[in-house]
Length: 235
Image 1 (cartoon, rainbow, N blue to C red):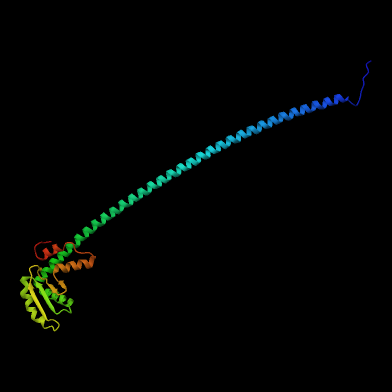
Image 2 (image 1 turned 180 degrees about the vertical axis):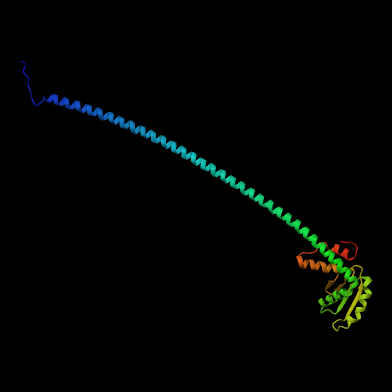
């Protein structure tokens, strides 16, 4: 019968072998684990790098799109500004044209009214000499301070004014007054000449003064009124 020898202890060489074997297995496990962790870290790094590249690409695309959109918006805004300015200029030109047209129509309408009033006044002056006398007296009042007067009147009306001469000379402030026939003076009117100027009391001159007082601008068709007053043109 074989004898079984039991012992609670192993030889020293066997203990060392077991320990070495365990160490190698543990080292192998650690190596595998380290390789796995390294691979995981590498994969994660690749993934993060890819994400960074994708984010950078997307950011670049977004930035490029934003810059492009900003450029397009700036161009559109500039075009809108030019369009608005051109539209404003066109509107101003239309308004000016309309204003000129209305002003022209209004001027012509007012001129027709003045022409009609001028004809009526001229007709009334032909039958009422007191109007001419009143205008002469107004001129003399405006020239107060002067003592010598020269009055130009239409040749056909010279005799009418001469009979006024004696009455006017009764004024102590007047030294002399002389009436001269002048075919440039329109019917019913007169022109008072002084040493330092003249006072035109012809009907066309009064119409021109009235026009300027009412509208603040000179009457452009004064010659037309002169012809109307001289009965050379009808309305």
